[in-house]
Length: 169
Image (cartoon, rainbow, N blue to C red; front, side):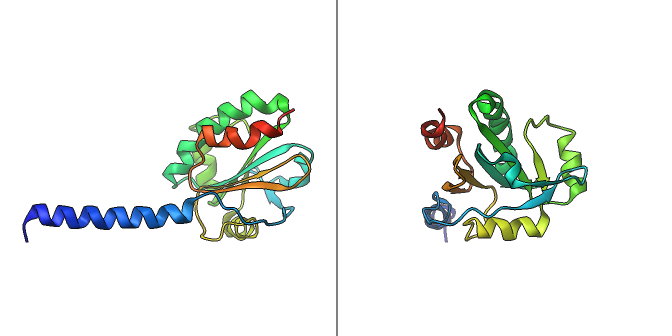
């Protein structure tokens, strides 16, 4: 087999896998109820999700080893700063070990709460609609506590703004 034939076969397979994967990372449209949760932060202080009740909550499940997760974080930091006064609250839930998260937080100044969830957080993500166990996974909850958007995979700023702008008063 010639190398050009091999390249074409690999390209066709990659396209097929990419198109199939796109099906799985499209924004989730299913309706699921919001599940209240309690998780510790990096200093082991437990936080309950009702601390941010009445706010537009962007709950992002991520991990230190997840490149798309780390790519989103600087954008989320900028959006938190820009929209905090408009009732928007980002909440990061790390699917990771506390030590790994603490080390990562030494490299970046995150201006929103980071909670440590480990395996319990993956179960919570499933309860909130993450049917494929994707990371990153983001849930947008309106000020009334209703889930209005679920995003498996990277959440681009433009897409996120389309979701939250109508909610901001």
